[in-house]
Length: 151
Image (tube, rainbow, N blue to C red; front, top):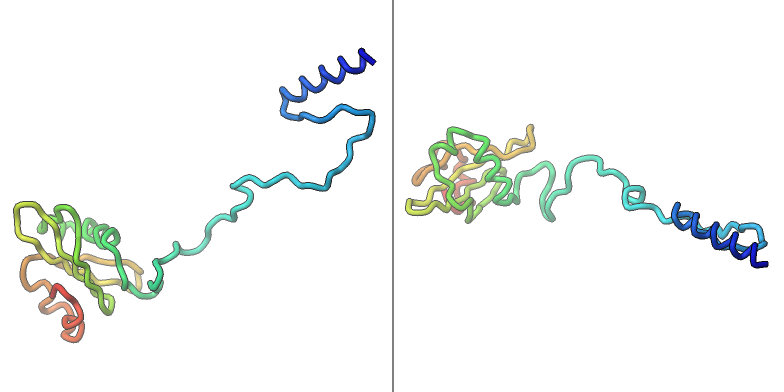
């Protein structure tokens, strides 16, 4: 009996070191029927398709839009971003019919308005113009100008 107990202790120690700890008994191991819990990677399917949109946003339309999205469009247009100091970022966003305006937050200078348009083909916002006066003039349809706060 003592020999068997020492053998079981040695087997248990060896299995514990290798991660396969099981019980010692004369009975044959049984199948408990319980499956191993899946890891996080196994339990979550990979994401496919377009990234989720904000509540209320449509993948076909540009509005509503957030400051981070417009700031990416602003930086992508070197002509506009070199002409206008964005400062601490864009604020006071107004969006209507695939057009948007936002106000810059520079330090020690006048705020400027930046005009954006949503390209429905490319599904992205584009910065079109920026300045302190008349950025919407001759670019935005009159019925949309009435809806945009900063025009």
